[in-house]
Image (cartoon, rainbow, N blue to C red; front, side):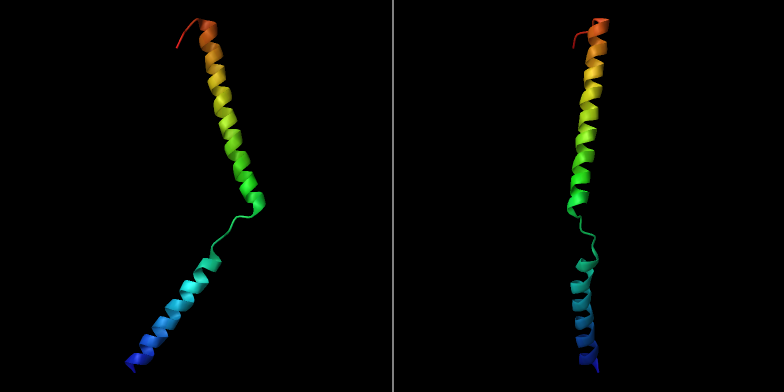
Length: 64
């Protein structure tokens, strides 16, 4: 009876290993573009903030 349980366990584990990667969410092209746009917008916002600080420093006479 033990070999039957072993074979059943191995088959069950094999089925899970094959099935689980299929459950993972894969990004489509629109999601990839959306993430890229979000990162770009965040980067632009950081640069605008840095430029604003530079203008304030220049207006107050501070030099870095």
